[in-house]
Image (cartoon, rainbow, N blue to C red; front, top):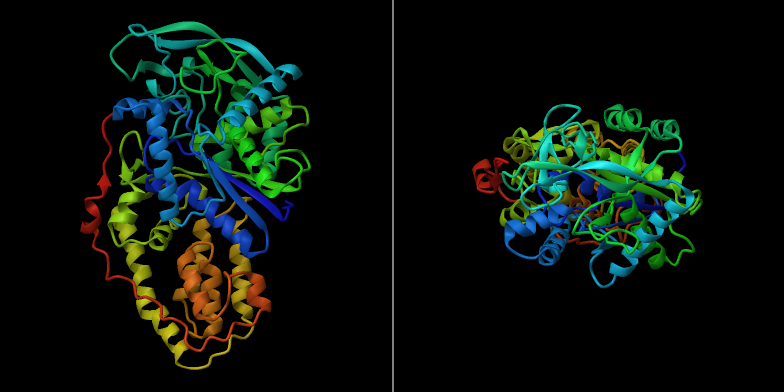
Length: 522
């Protein structure tokens, strides 16, 4: 499919109800960074913009657990998540707090305007639904306050989405619904909320098929289209969220991923001086959504339904990148259940570097569905990279410093890099296949000359940026590794480049054991 030279990637906004774990790091955000670096290396103008999901009810649940206000919880974790992403070398062009002074009014107004537009076109309809309430407190049991079993796969779940099969459901479809905040009986009431339904469900499915969405990620979308024709929620019950003068006090506008992305588009438009939002049809900017498979409805269905209902004022994502859920030691990584390894603890408290953690996580094939990583596997990949740097890379760079070794046109390196970058487009990317290309280059038969080192830098650039920049600098190049620079620019004359730093000694799994959090009971 055609891609514009200007690209906006919007990884789904993380909820500021805690710091980031390796499931977050190894999924959506690593994919956004890797794809952005690969596109930039090919000459595209790329921006990565996202922020925290401050109006999510899980924030209220975290605030209740931590004994402080939702506002304090948001501010603290919003800043902490930004540090986590930076520690993993995930680069963002903007990090948005929708509740902060800079964005609050404009963010709310965008949601008001889109709801008004959908009502005006007739796409939004006021419909009745059954909502569970706690009989003792009268609280609406939605989001983090309700638990039960998935109506599709029967696994334990809550809220409106199953993290195992990706099924999306409304509260009354939850099997054996129960309160998560006490033993109060569940009382069902009829409420009225705004919904929109796809004008052309078949077109939505075909668009994602044509874009190369893999069948494992297409399946939940097809179930939603077959089950309820692509019906999506526009408003819901809530005390915490985006209130509107057009809604009763106990209702909020749905703080969905797509409208969050449209707001990110506004930030992009303002920062670049563009005439229109990237989500305006014909904007000339390729928009890319990135999210986990448990968000199939917000990421795959809602954008098309809202775009259809807007009657030409909004366009859905041009491409979508979906990843499976990362499991750690057999269970899905989870903030609320405290299961996994937290990025801040691992990258700030141990010798594991951002490149090393990225290298380990890239070997989990999340582009093809759920995958599991163990402490042993993580340690193995970290140590394999350390050993290669010590026994292969460091001697090659030391030999480079011994004398004059001109960097001639590295034909095979350029060809292999182009093949690897083709695996890292926003249309059906495969990060695990891309890291295998790097593995084959660095561990296969080779002559450790400058041409081979050019390949190391080009192939590592999207995946292991610190390593790539180090090798590129040692070769005497300026700026960062790109195909154009490797093909056309002579290296700068540097007779004595700085020595590369040897990695730490092999990592012992016992060193990491104290940083492991095992799943708490619900």
